[in-house]
Length: 140
Image 1 (tube, rainbow, N blue to C red):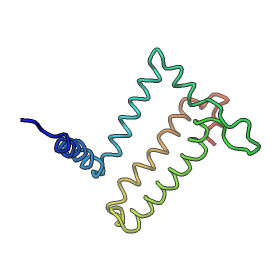
Image 2: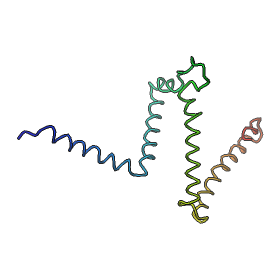
Image 3: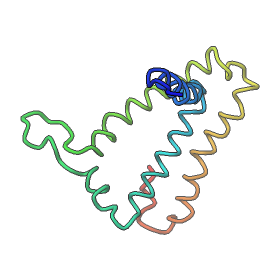
Image 4: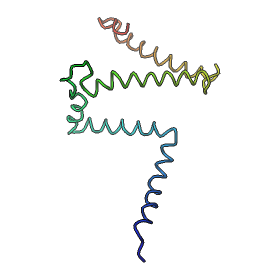
């Protein structure tokens, strides 16, 4: 029996795209994708041929323009994309506090305490290790 190619294409498309659609519609997909990309970049950067990967992020590509813009990909990420990320994160936290899961004090106290501890504990560790050195002013 001869099967035409036109009947195989929709099945193949359905078999490939449906699981991808379910995956990306899940709210956890972004976290899984972020962890996967982080692991992949760590593996590439620490492999024997990882120098090209590390050099890629510091390659200057806008150095000849008369405007003052960051010259490398790492500077673009640090100067622009991280600012945008923290703006969105702050807006999401505000929305959660006003009308979301953290709108009641009882539900918000644990994440607030964890965030406060996440700031205080590293500062205390820094002070403990640097209290008798010239670097104690580094966290001010």
